Length: 199
Image 1 (cartoon, rainbow, N blue to C red):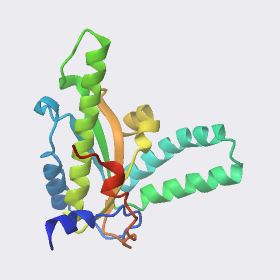
Image 2 (image 1 turned 60 degrees about the vertical axis):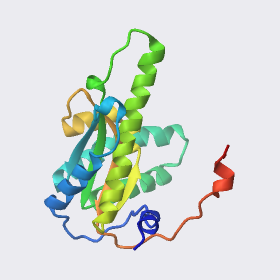
Image 3 (image 1 turned 30 degrees about the vertical axis):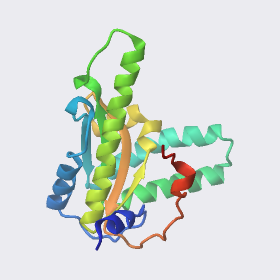
Image 4 (image 1 turned 90 degrees about the vertical axis):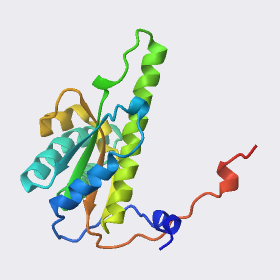
């Protein structure tokens, strides 16, 4: 397959076959993810791989407390809250592999002024996101499905405690990974003319 066509064939997969994913395959995917570009080549990305059912349940239960609090602020009915919570829980525990993508800012440059400090933090976030995109493409190359979710951004401290993470590891995203049970249809993209300017 033409490489450009292959790259465009990646989809956000949310339903997986209950088939174990070999650890060697996950290690290969993570290795490829580490070839992403990063500011100053500091490689601030960190990965937490969760395959154990107990750990999935623990993470799901911990995140549900915060999720419920947020849904209550949206003034949803109790029935709708329970539906959303159950959907979220089912999605997590039914995923063969969960990968939490974290950022470690401790090795980035430190500046005394707010402007440069904020830019450095943004560069670390962008670097970590680069690794996330590379991770998804690596999973796609292995025939796996994957979806990016930003749920940990809404409950970073809860995720840290549930997974016993280092204080310097800041949760940024969560990837659900496995063999796809379905391939979602293509969703239309904006045209290059709409989103680009050539000079």
